[in-house]
Image 1: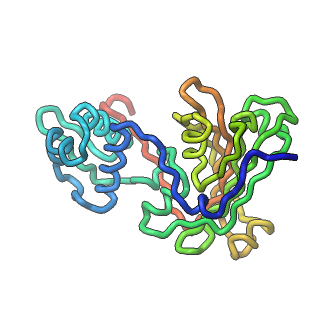
Image 2: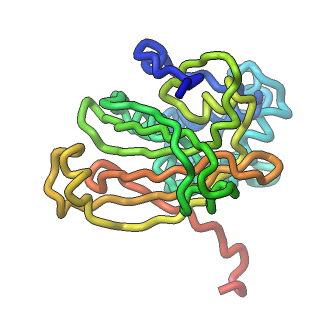
Image 3: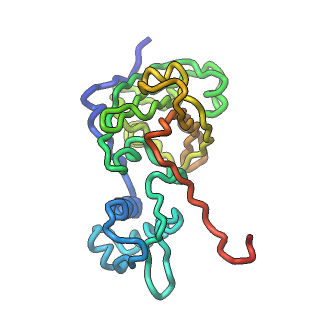
Length: 259
């Protein structure tokens, strides 16, 4: 079989740079400032013009970024007063944010790495075909990665996407599937729907994680979609429970009568 993808060890270490809109870049920069404790809980953020100048974007982009952060529960916007940092800030450990494991690990102040990475073209089984709306047996690319935090394995990922997405020319897979889909395949993921399942690591993954088989992990099965709500990738992630602190933001209620 002639495969148009090469797992280049050099490109694996080079971070993929996704093309982000100005508002997304601004939101990401503000999250990083919050994570670095640039502002304390209850602090009022600088004005929109000041943030626009500091971040190098327009006021419209800043306004959109602040609206995104408010939807994530990180800040509160008070009419006529300004934008304030919330007292409880889940940041990137919150399950409502669709980010990669690499960013999740780095955001916690740890060095992210890859202890193992491989890819192969396989026929879609019943589960993968159902999640990606394919026929059983259709060719898909299976990308396998072992993520490390400070050189310790903490996440095992199996990602699947249709082989038809690949361009005809030979390309290299990097550490970011979202970056690869966007930059190489021209497909941008806009949202994902995940199911969560607590489980024991089990014998096969116990070897990878170097922990007892009875150690706990969180399994996240997620289908990612593009702007047309077409499923573009399916992932099965095993996160070592002891290495992560996942949280869920629950918005509201906004009036006393709703509960």
